[in-house]
Image (tube, rainbow, N blue to C red; front, side, top):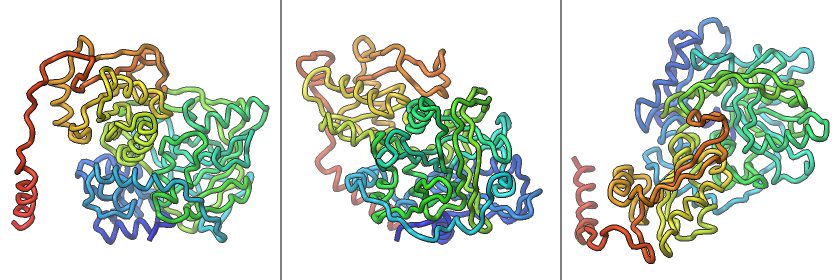
Amino acid sequence: MAYDDLRSFLEVLDREGQLLRITEEVRPEPDIAAAANAAPRLGDAAPALYFDNISGFTDARIAMNVHGSWANHALALELPKETGTKQQVEEFIRRWAEFPVRPEWREHPLWAENTQDGDDVDIFQVLPLIRLNDGDGGFYIDKAAVVSKDPEDPENSGKQNVGIYRIEVKGKRRLALQPVPVHDIAQHLRKAEESGEDLPIAIAVGNDPVISIVASTPMRYDENEYELAGALRGAPAPIAPAPLTGLPVPWGSEVVIEGVIEGRKREVEGPFGEFTGHYSGGRSMPVIRIDKISYRSNPVFEHLYLGMPWTEIDYLMAANTCAPLYEQLTKDFPEVQAVNATYTHGLVVIVSTRKRYGGFAKAVGMRVLTTPHGMGYAATVIVVDEDVDPFNLPQVMWALSTKMNPAGDLITIPNLSVMELGPQADTPGIVDKLIIDATTPVRPDHRGNYGNPVQDLPEMGEWLSRLRQLAAER
């Protein structure tokens, strides 16, 4: 049965041995972030962490690393926790085919138990805020679903947006938000500012696990995240109108923060330890005025540690980056077999494909760079043959070692867009991008000597099954 809130998912994680409750007293800094930094090092079955005995706080609950392993990610999709990476991506793609599934409006949302309004708003009374990395410029909220609508077409549910963006806490009623230009909320804000208006938003903190997944999925501008959540859940996503803005927010959230992004106002935001494994510097960013906070009694603050991969965000944004790229590529190139964009939010993308003719793989690589995700993130695309598993790095390295000739297989495209957080860019937001063709040349491209490939022995499949059975019986 689909999860409707964070707490029901934490209960399942606990029952499955995937939640570690830290009962001893810990310091808010650096203990909580350091533990979340360490947790993914436990491997693909690393647990979520739950803290409720935090020095300096009389009543605080913080959940970390909730999506921080393939086991937890599988359980979020209601799959067996042993489900492998490639299988989870394939299941994600299969469920994507059911998109859209319209959400379900529900009454009596869980977050409506308590409220703060206007001048009485004090976010520090609601959330136990902590810093994540030593160099962070302040407290951050980094795993919240931010909801906004297109000001020019507010009734079009396809053009509404549910996204995860880093949010710095600037004061008890003041936040700073980073809207990356390729993200939908940046388009919403641009339209509002061009009309001389503020942009109403709602920020949902502590959500059911699928909401966090879809909020970090690079969907098209006119695709509704709640409708994807329904497809992934196998049931309509429950939503409710936020009381001040009327924006649709998850029904089961722990906290809902409402206010506006104030038009044409900017403040310095940052630095922040980002998913790239590097700090971003301080930059002038839009500011949010909080006008209302609604929250459950005894709210659980779900936080997310970011740093050098792999951390939780690398699991959260793995399958949901592969699936839309696969869906978008196969519309133009049905020869595409699989897409692996699990590394650092798809800054590197590996694609396996059949070829129609010589030069075909390079065209596939260029198409990756023109997808919504590719334009802002993908910096290097590696294209391999259909018999190379892009999720099997030894096979990918074999293809690079034996198929790629730098004389003709490295295509550099100068001065393309990349998100400003990319540390490899000399000028923030602009970078040269690379396509690596590691496929076997086909006519009329005659290069190399590939006429005698070694094939798997006919009996290999039978022996693979026998060996797996013997290993399981040990």
